[in-house]
Amino acid sequence: DQQVKQNSPSLSVQEGRISILNCDYTNSMFDYFLWYKKYPAEGPTFLISISSIKDKNEDGRFTVFLNKSAKHLSLHIVPSQPGDSAVYFCAASQEGGTASKLTFGTGTRLQVTL
Amino acid sequence: EAGVAQSPRYKIIEKRQSVAFWCNPISGHATLYWYQQILGQGPKLLIQFQNNGVVDDSQLPKDRFSAERLKGVDSTLKIQPAKLEDSAVYLCASSYDSGSVAQYFGPGTRLTVL
Image 1 (tube, one colour):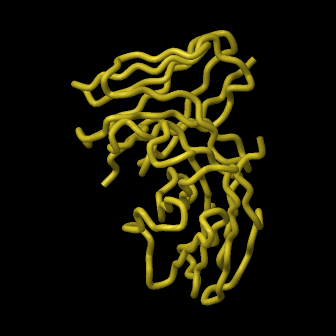
Image 2: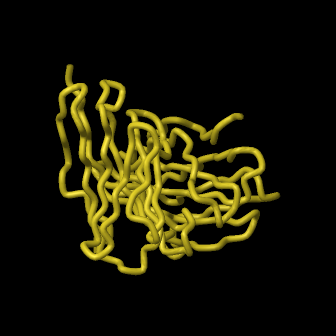
C-alpha cells in the first residue's frame, strides 16, 4: 500500500509564478515530513522539512504547509526559477521527529518554463 | 565536505549473475541507508545501519540481497543471483545518527539486468 502519495506526476509553471506541489499520506503515525529535489543522474537533495507539531515551515523561496487533519502537505516555491525544474519527492517518517526510516512518494516532475 | 560516494555509477549484467555496489558515507555519519528506486517510483528503504549494526532490514529480500558495513564506515550491497525485476537505481544515504533531521544521498548506481 502506498502510504505517501503524490497524485500529480508532473507540473508545468511559468518562471516567476508560484509552484505548488502536493502530497497526501495515510499513516497517522507519521510525525515528520521532508521534501527532496532530484536532478537527472543525481541523488535526491534535501530541501525542507516540517515536524507534525507545526503547520508551516519557510526557508527562502520554499515553504511547506502541513494539514494534519487532512493528512496533506504541500510545497510552495515562490518565485519559481528554471533551475527548480526537477523531480520533487515527498517523504515521511514516524520515528519521533527524525529522518529515520523514510517512506517516499512517487515524485512530481516540475518544469519551470521561460 | 565530501558527499556520499557510490560506485559503480552504472552496471549491466545478465540475470542470475551477481553484482555488488559500494558506498562511502559522509565522514562522521553513523547511520547508513540503502534504497532501491525502480523507474517511476520513489526510493524504497532496503536496509539501515547504525555504525556496523543493522537497525532495519525488514524490506530487504534476504534470499538474494545482502549488505554489510564492516568497521562502521563503507558499505557494500550485493545481489546474488540477480533477477530482471532488480533493475533499478540503488541509492545510498547517510545521516549523522538515527536522530538526524535529514538524510544525504549519493548519486546512485543504475543497475540493468538483461
